[in-house]
Length: 182
Image 1: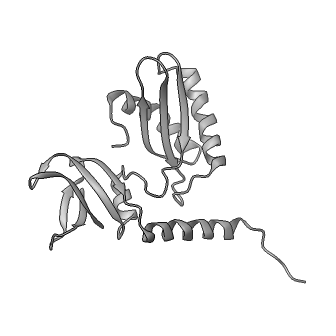
Image 2 (image 1 turned 180 degrees about the vertical axis):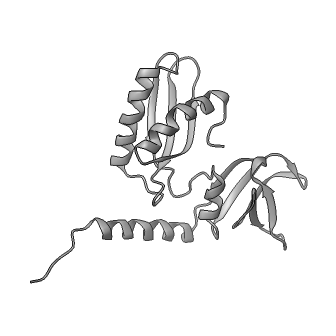
Image 3 (image 1 turned 120 degrees about the horizontal axis):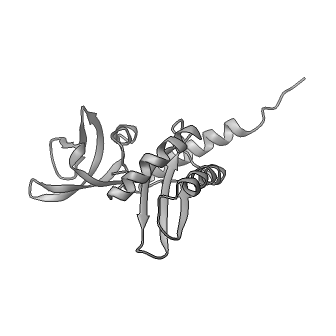
């Protein structure tokens, strides 16, 4: 899910070690467009706190650009975009489903299950290689094999917005110089 196409996955193999060495994790990579005006879109975050500010984006963009220029894996011109996954982020790794337990998500499968491919509900954690989801209108928690998930994304809710605000407030608190009294 971090990459959709074979070309995306090949680029991830190249870029993942660069991102990790710089202190970031790639959430999603997409190479979009045809032969002309292609765009390489990378969503990343700091694994320590899930944050990604403008300086982080610039730092990671420079590190990736160096490798991309040296290796030249994309034919023709392209634009590199590095961004934060945002508050209503895509869920692309099994660990994401555990991290955001208790939050609403939309999940789309690559196959039919119980007569449908799309589900919405509250994330209820992870059991082995399955995502637990309390589906709207269902009494029991569903276990969805992670391998069946084509796309998943958090739903923007007040609860999710509060989580983001709390994380930003905590970051600002640690970034401010401490006052000392004599």
